[in-house]
Image 1 (cartoon, one colour):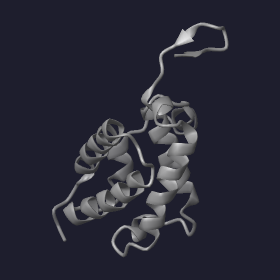
Image 2: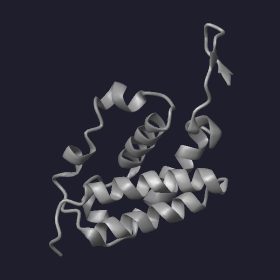
Image 3: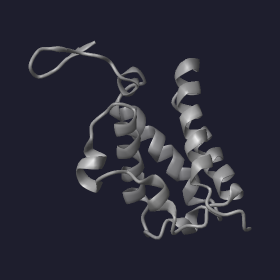
Length: 135
């Protein structure tokens, strides 16, 4: 448990349990290192610099796992399917995304249950983003 500003005890979150912001900074950074060199995924990020996408992903994952609500404060509801609809995400893109995300998660050296919990969510999210079966 942790204490809020009012001194009341708060429940710890998954965000807290795996190391808070430093963990999510590393996760997003390691993931985008892989994306930067991926010939299928890189074109889906129109920004010259991947830093804005890295920050958005970090903020989203932090919020999802019980950290700060900065993502929604700045961008509103996540609407992941809608935000990804302009991009053709086929099973190959999904699998490449999962490859880079798995490699990034593995750099965190999480406890097995924490790794499994995080990967379960990421796997389900990646499958949910598929919006075409065209090559």
